[in-house]
Image 1 (cartoon, rainbow, N blue to C red):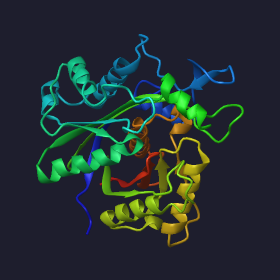
Image 2 (tube, helix red, strand yellow):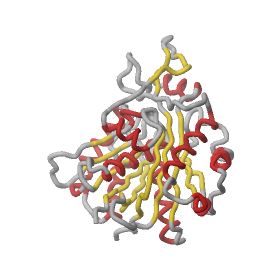
Image 3 (tube, rainbow, N blue to C red):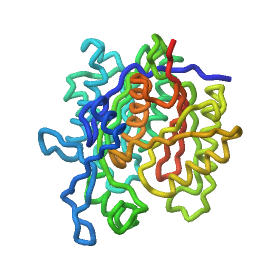
Image 4 (tube, helix red, strand yellow):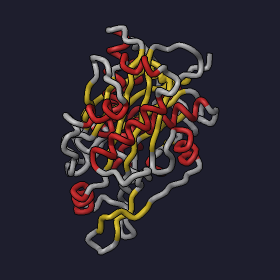
Length: 341
């Protein structure tokens, strides 16, 4: 049975290629990237390159996460009167607990710092969503419940993350997962923040989330198990069932894939397992090509790119599959449809 859709009303995005959603999405569309040297040196004696967000002050740690989040939230809520902000529950997406080098205070300090910087106290129903790259899908499911069951008019979803710490980069470099001149099978680390304001479908020009699916992949990266993409395939099938459509009816795909062959292979296998009718083209967009591996921000960035592309009429069609995966094996999929009438 089709699920109740929810609408993305507005967006905000802070990335290494732009400090707003229009700037970031324009750069991503033009395939512009801006990697720079970090203050961390690799085992080869070379400075590690990354997609760093340039802010007016050299904030680090929780302070930078908070600042990036408040910028994205402020952009997202620009059209909402300030006195209405406190009526919104905030679902804050952050790194999963398994993340190497995860910042201390993500679960008990970051939310408060964001509220203090914005000078607002968010409504009951607010929560921390600590599932890394799949966080936005978990937050969408939670937001749908708040909107449909609790009659909450609007819910704010925000994400903020950074992989640019010595502990995080040290682990990923040791596992040979970073993109370097000597390793093409890797990702370039990044950081950023994003925000989505969601609610009941209203006017045309909104990107609707019509289905959400979740599953677990036993053969997650580093498991040593043969990859069959069973988890991602299951998540996509659940999302399609909720949306009441087939994969062949969608126009393109967008993902959090950031460069590792494992995730590209998983996407290809899932397509083979789920697609039942031939499609001449089924493009896969991956914004990480421009902004790097941005952790929990990746999912919000993908949905923001899809929303901006639809509104500015350069999307490949009104229906899109977004699929997300984290290293722990969690898989998520969302069916999105642009409302034109």
